[in-house]
Image (cartoon, rainbow, N blue to C red; front, top):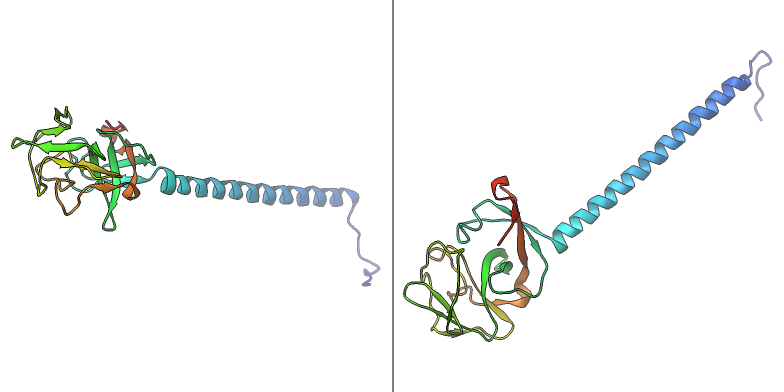
Length: 195
């Protein structure tokens, strides 16, 4: 054991108490910092998981869904397996995600007249969201019955949209569905729920 020199001064009780307070403060600071960083990392990881797995945020490219969704809009989708006609859905196609509107479900008959009006099971479909009715790129033999476990989708901008009317894309299988588009977050002028 090393001895102190005979002329060395020992710290006073007050100095020792001051050192002890300083060490406690330092310990509390690092403990608080570690806890804060841990909470921030956990919240960040949870937010990323929610955004990727449960509610993906997607950017819209192209004009096939205008005027409902404009190019460069950002939308939120929700994982939902029960899509209804009129819902807007996102789905995988050739390593891309496309966004179109659900028109018909499996077993239903789709017919499109020369003016671009859509009939489901012989009933005219009410489509207030469509601004330009057109037959578009359609190589199907109409009327067309939607196959089992598939949905028939179309863009709202019918003259430019390539969708289930074309055998290139065809009907969308359930396993291709990313989710239902429910909310627009950008631009701010379109902020709100999507119908």
